[in-house]
Image (cartoon, rainbow, N blue to C red):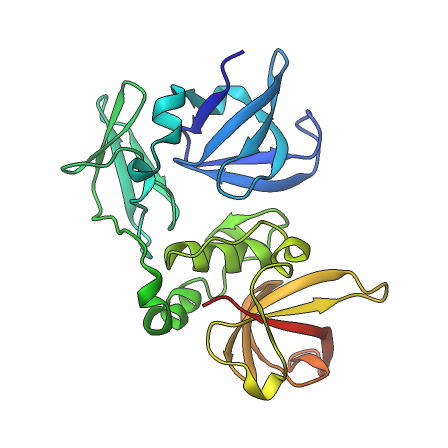
Length: 259
């Protein structure tokens, strides 16, 4: 079995089990790399390169690459920008519309490549840089405002709470793990809500004490997060207060700083 692959479609569902009926736990975006761990007639178990997530997917949505191509980190540094019109055109003239933060493998002189296949990149890409974080994090996060909530989603057309902060951070050159319960293990502790600043992540737990939600602080009293949709709500020491529902919806557990 050939191990190394790259996602060749705009967005591919990653499922808990090898079945079309199985829960979608995450998504691959164009250019995301995976290692194939198992393969059946239709399905394969993969581990993602960017966040070490294991899940099942349809192997027809992958392009095989060599170990050398897979491990060439410099060739995966360009990504699609915060923009509604990120287009690729293949040599047959077919168009692919990509979500922000999609990777453009082996980008050079207006083209990117998957194996032997060439794509013209119609929108100027970026190389994310964490030195821009403080200046760009609020605008990047606000781009996703009103994107609908989707469990396992990572795109503007459907995104979950941890997928949202992961996407914002990726566009600014920072790497987060996939789930809120994993992300909370990263970063440095912020002792008090009053000390929170733009770009910090706030984590929230359930009755059993499990981390189940994450959002991005816009200030020490405002948060942007995906709940129903990507929205901005007030936050205090108790947690997030939803003005529409007139009640607290998420109980604050901890705040982390990543840069």
